[in-house]
Image (tube, rainbow, N blue to C red; front, top):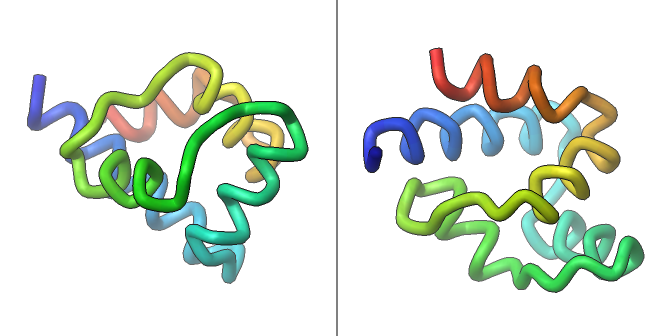
Length: 77
């Protein structure tokens, strides 16, 4: 399970960096969508130390303009 979290986190970090966004910016956008997730939690998700909650996945999908299933599929493979 940890290996899957690491792969997913690595993919999320890649997406964020491709969009030239910081963890603070992503956390601020999540707050706009009423999703509680600090930049520290985002960092832990990206490093595979914390599981990705469904609400955060939905928010990241909106922010990054990529379908949630695509995030999960590409982050898992």
